[in-house]
Image 1 (cartoon, helix red, strand yellow):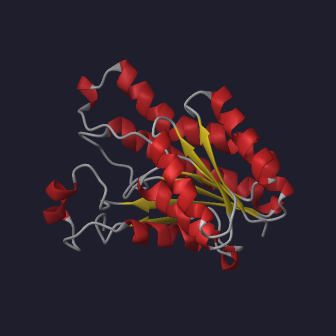
Image 2 (cartoon, rainbow, N blue to C red):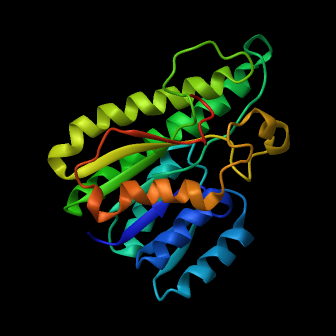
Image 3 (spheres, one colour):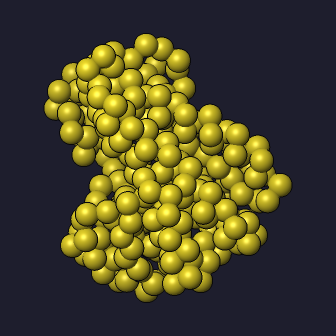
Length: 239
């Protein structure tokens, strides 16, 4: 596999961990950020310690033209793309009746639409790679169609990502591109982690390394025949 990867939202958190892991495995990598330029530059500097090329790119990927430019520039500077990880997505905790139109649009745009924009822009490069991976991010229980009292917009977006992923996986299998979903539960960097721990069967959040292991499972060369799948990394939370 051509070792060239773009991970969105990779200046901090799980996106950063994923990108550094790919760098450690010999991938040239593109770190994407919207506002965290200093963190992105620091992460890229760390990646170069693995002897790979690491670039930093800014974009608001809720805007189609910026998503397109991000992908084009990353592919040009890296010499192609074989892996795209769509990690960006804002969370909103609010009842649906109190969710404003602007909040609804922001959540759908940052999660579902950004995933679509980046992937659409990347497809020509991924097809040219002769074997490629797309990994999208949903969340634990997004496959279960149920009422959501406090995070409706977010769950609509994440369930949409799963439907989009499965549809795209079926279309792209002929092009040697796999498309899969990671669905984390509460992770160590979640904003409400202390509040949620008592509700978790494992009584602890996932580490970033544990989420990252799931992402690498889909990317590694032994996963050529796995596509359209959803892997929850949630410690049994949604069982």
